[in-house]
Amino acid sequence: VAPGVGIGKVITEVGGWPFHGWNRKAAGTIWGAVMQGMYLTAIIFVICTAALYQWCIVGLVIYIGFATLLGLLRTSVRAAYQIEHGDLITDFICACFAPMFTVSQLEEQVEKDSAAKIVG
Image 1 (cartoon, rainbow, N blue to C red):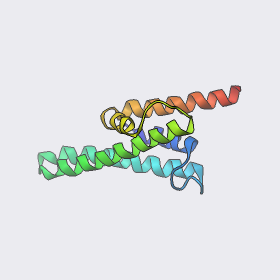
Image 2: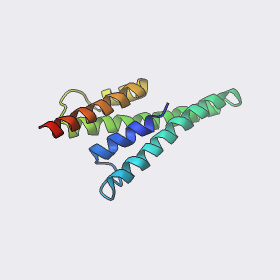
Image 3: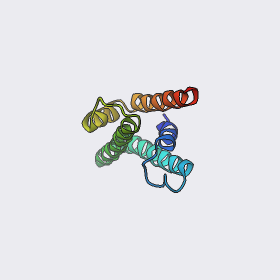
Image 4: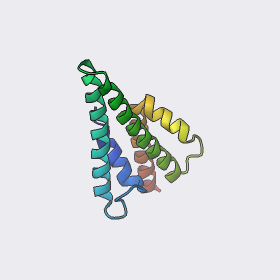
């Protein structure tokens, strides 16, 4: 229901997104809010299809934008943690068809790697 929170945490840790060079925490907050807004806006527009069909198209376009950004985040996590398996197309497909699993996977990877850095 709130993928923006997890996305913000991942962006804060991984970096490589706009505003990250300026302030890590702000970048995570800004991009988390943007992604959360896109996700909720897409759902609202699809619900508005009951009034006018064109809202469905608008909602789906916004959702594709959300999935694209989430796929790019998954790609940047794979690059940051040197995960060799996968590609951008697979990342987009995962983000589009299973966004909450994708966010959970990203959070788990960042959490696992942070714990390894603390121990080792």
